[in-house]
Image 1 (cartoon, one colour):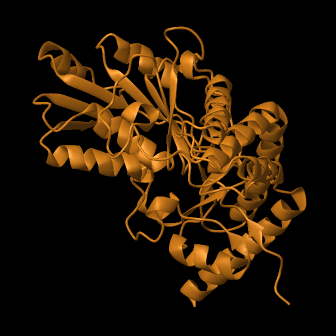
Image 2 (cartoon, one colour):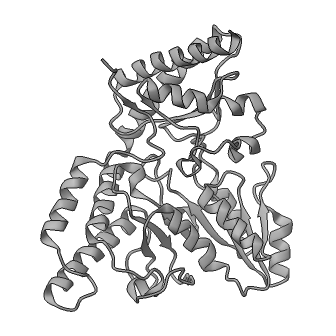
Image 3 (cartoon, helix red, strand yellow):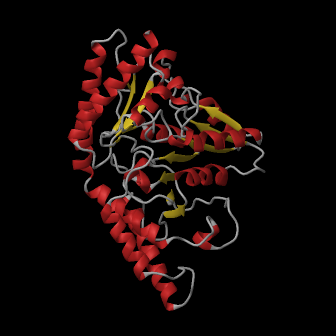
Length: 392
């Protein structure tokens, strides 16, 4: 008889909250019209959509009233929102453009940066020993260049939370446009768009027990982006296409629940995460190759553990744990299956052995204490098995 599965890959996606399903079901039942239609059912759909949009903006700390209100642009997810922020701001005909990104970005930012690099744009990867690239930013300002900084709020692999407010303050003196990928942060730590001081912020509800297939780019008032899609006037033409009302409702509901329950959720996940790490580190102390918790001394998301078992191949361990009924990953789901070392871990200056043995364990709001104890047992068993095979 197979052992019950344990899901520890919530940074890839989270199971949807039944309360969110109920809200979406009501929307599907009560709203079968296109929100762009001018008839009565269409107007009702539009009201439902805009109420969801305004609720999301308010919950994220964006300004919702007045002539200088911020905007929420719905997308298909975090990847599209990141693409829209970068490609929509730095245009192909911008003769002088500079993009600065951190070395920790999600593939949807790093690969978009590669596109801009092929368009002969100046793409700078910020180094760990400097909060931002002053020389490039100063050069951009003096040459009247378009300048964009994209710096993620919390890393999807390590859970490390970056000092975004300090970076924003420093970049403001160079009049840079600042975007942050906050996909992993929202729902796990407090996030307030206006307090961060950024111009654009990416969010995706499937990371906090909301629906897949929808994301958002929050934009500061006055920000204009070039659409990356054509074919309609929806969302001021910035992201055309018929909006999915039920997904927007689910987005708002999951965010409302996550914000309301954040203190209890965060503390519970942190305690369970720490218990899991403690058990795995205790096991490591008994071995020739100690267990390494990456980023342990840095501010981290409460649910994330990037943990390495030196001497064990990360891909083999993930497959062994899958067979054992523990779902985890080697890093970003968008880079799943890649044999290349993690750019994030390489940028941190970790040894090849630590990088080669690193996996990501990420908890959710509904992860149970019994699951954590059992997961530790299965992980230790899998590591012992792989090490014995290697030594034999």
